[in-house]
Length: 499
Image 1 (cartoon, rainbow, N blue to C red):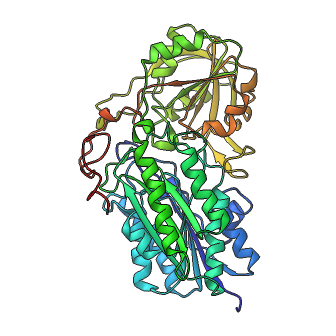
Image 2 (image 1 turned 90 degrees about the vertical axis):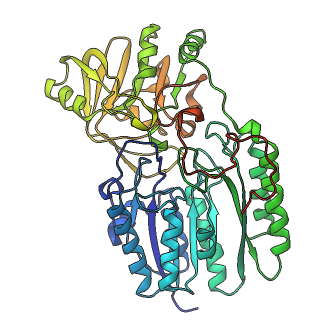
Image 3 (image 1 turned 30 degrees about the vertical axis):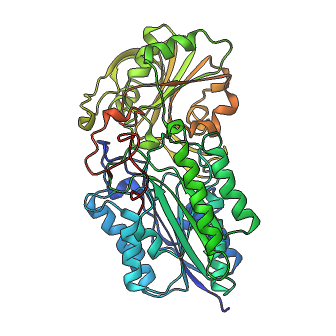
């Protein structure tokens, strides 16, 4: 075929509808055209993967917008409309194909299904343009997504170390469509169940052999693409579920695709009890950490995780670690712009006493911000920027804003102006701290920490701290969710609950 014109766009956000952190257009740091390509080319991201394939086929590439924000609260209406208008406008002018890097769990102030609505609008102006969509493993699949896309693929890993590969998988199938090698059709379904983000990583059971089956079916050519989605529990929306999308060749694979789809989801449903997280009192968890041997010992505060919408300023785990007398600790990053300003004003080597963190209330969980009084010496101030060298989002630039290190004597606390989940050692090494040499490493994360920190850890202790990313589902007031939905309702027949 002649040189194709491809519209390549990114609009990514995982929305925690219980989070008090606002999501404005500035949160997305939108780029376009050459600036977007310069920022993301060669990176392990969906956009980077899509771009690789577009380059391989010699496509003319147009980038109307590339925008991604840390998980947080509802996307403001104005921000959503601005991003949608850019993407729809870019496709409306004419193209041979569209490659869209999306998330699958975006909720705007006025739209529960952010990605489905975007795709519906695209189809209204371009009913026949082939569209490849990449999604996060935590996507919520809806009819509008599947009905409006040509190809859908999702991450197979958590931590997400295959983002670039996911974009490539979707794009390569779409190239086969453009070359008239295949006629794709998608089948999808869900099971009405929540899976904990602490229990559903595809690298371990109960999800591992389910995902392995999907990977094997795609690798063998049984189907064109096979994806499984664990979903994102911290969203009060009607389409919460565990779901799967299979892309098949209409001419040969439809029957095999449906059989695979049912087998994947039936396996997940049969294991639904194993997908639930069972926590413990925080004091008990920290006390257990004290009994462990040589470090580094990771203390993972999963109740206040930026990459699930946390404020990154809840101090409950730090406070308990201090109360129990843990020493040789590095902790952070704690997001507290006011504290950073105080620390920088004091200057390097100065002694500082301040109320750290706890600046943001969390009304959806009836939690008030609770600052922690700390005293220490300022040992480092940085611009908070570094390039990721680990396996997740490799090559991307992390921007934490101005960042400072406060040394209390027993704990080095990294404090930043902006939120950033610690999935790469750079959050500490960029400011002169080697976490491999610490006894305790206290970080706010759920699973992404495993990309950079699990390889250096002697022990990992999950810590049930406070916050809007808590794994205790009893804390969340779901008003829009489907009914029945496991585990809120447990004794119900599965028949009739699927779409």
